[in-house]
Length: 285
Ligand SMILES: [Zn+2]
Ligand SMILES: [Zn+2]
Image (spheres, rainbow, N blue to C red):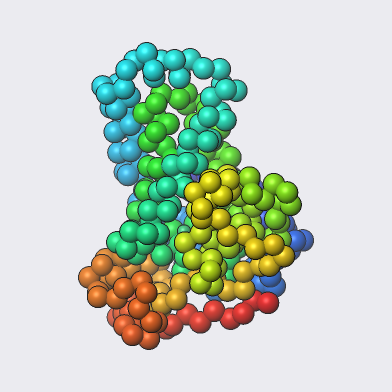
């Protein structure tokens, strides 16, 4: 959110999602919830930190497009009609999101970056931005690198980005929406809420951004019928301020704590100097 059009978009998001969450709340939750100020910092400051990474991804992809892939392939793709390109772009980008997200979960060093996103305990639309800048860069690389490398049109890629922009707010929103019979095809708020669940059976599940069928296909779907996640967050203490969360991966990489260590075994010290308080998730009923 670095410019006026970004601020207008944000205003629109607020005007849509704040009443939407009041109307269809999945859990009772205040608008002025815990961690709101930290999320505002993510919202307004992350963009400045990721811009260099995104430019690097696009530059590398354009180089691959122009010097590695055969021109006949990239030209044929670029010449496809817009309405043919858009569904292909969305399918490829979400496959990239799926595997990048899965790698961020299973590679321990990557998890320390991505765990910042999973630290959120009161899930709502604004939790979408609670993401370490490196996490944002990796996810954008997974989605955008193949698109720019293969030579899809800027219009088709922009359409995907617009859909993904609204999808990220929607799937984090505190709304009760499960999409019924489409729940195993499209990612619903219910599907992504399970991804954020701190319950053991939901751990490392539901990686897709738009198409839940990727999780069904690759055996990582978790969507128990008639149930909803009770608690969110990670099972070890996390810092709560923006700067401490930015520093968190470095602190974690240099500590000996492992993801599966019991919570009390190695208490984490945030960069601010004060011991982090274990974030106990209250049952949300
Ligand atoms: Zn995740
Ligand atoms: Zn999320």
